[in-house]
Image (cartoon, rainbow, N blue to C red; front, side, top):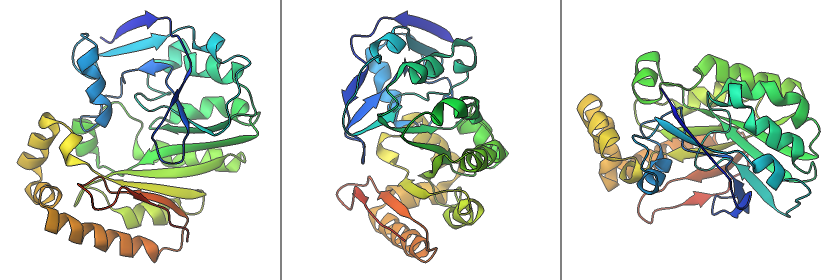
Length: 269
């Protein structure tokens, strides 16, 4: 059973280093979706509530904090949680935040949940909003083991289609890209008719955590070796990037996150 901790936050928006975003907003800390590779697991060191995925901090006063607040620059929701994780269906904190938020704010939302469709009516009130779904196409076995509480690949695809049909600017965040487990080209082919642009991210094995690294090594040795050995990884990245360039789609950025190779590069078309 998920442990819910309710707190009062001091502020709603915090400066962000996420590419393309000036601020981040996190009405939740912690994530019930519990992806075993999640980089945000690091926040657990500051909260003694148990294993990542077993607890969620709810900033219950966030709807009040965003009232009459306008900041210039893109705001990203969310960086250390998922705004539409399962608990949101009941608490509706994200919806309340969106209702109270200035509709002139430039807002970027990313989620792994089809629950995002619930708030299409509010999205339409914003003057500048982009809504993305993380797409990786894990098969059912892999998803169950490392991403157990996210929406299925099919539901995420349908969510992007519905958002697009309703006039919402959409993007697909292809992540984490793992050799043999994620088919980047196929994902682009599946989504290009209803996605405005893409972000891509190769798995950062170093920050994915010991538990995930051991799982990958034991179950997908070849993928582990590619991600763990710089020459192999550089060759793999080059192959994927070259293939993506030929797809003639709008790629906003490709995050490499390996040593000092490349952190992010903007690409269009």
